[in-house]
Image (tube, protein in one colour):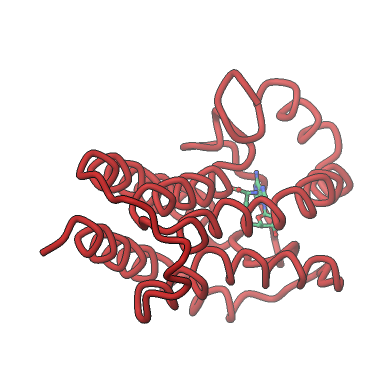
Length: 195
Ligand code: SAH
C-alpha cells in the first residue's frame, strides 16, 4: 500500500470515530427545547464552508482522487504526525461533548435551562470544540497528500469560526452577564495561554 493511501485510510477512520462520538448528542439535542436561536444566513454560510472543507471536499478527494493536479508527495512522517493530531482532535472533541452535555448545539442556540459550562476542557479555553475542529483540519492537511483535499478543512472551518465566535461570545454575555465576563477574563479562546 502507498503512503498516500495509508493517509486516506487514517483520515476515514478518524471521521468515523468523530461521527460515533457525535451521533448520540445529535439525537439527544433534538429533544431539548431551543429557547433562542441565531440561524442567520451568515451562520449557514459558515456551517456549509466547514462541512465542505472538513467532509465533502476531502471525501471526494479520498473517493475519486480529484483534483489530481493538486497532489503532492506523501512522506510517512506526515501520515504519522497527521494521525497523532487527528487522534488528539477526536479526544478533545469527546471531552467537550461530555462537558457540554445537553447544552450542546450545532449552531448558536440557547437551550431550555441552559447552563454555563466551565469544567473539563472549558476550564482552560472558551472554545475547546472549535479547537478540536482546527486540530482535525490540521490533521487532515498532514494526512491527505493533496493541496485542495488537505487544506480545505482548515480553511472551511476558519470561515465558520471567524464568522461565529464574536457572535457566540456576545450571546453568552447577554445571557450569563458578569459570570461569562469573569470567565472570559480568565480563559483564552482556542489555545491555552495564547489565543
Ligand atoms: N464554542 C464552544 C461550544 C460550541 S457548541 C466550543 O467550541 O467548545 C455551540 C453552542 O454551545 C452554542 O449554542 C452556545 O450556546 C453553547 N456554548 C458555548 N460556550 C458555552 C459554555 N461555556 N457553556 C455552555 N454553553 C456554551
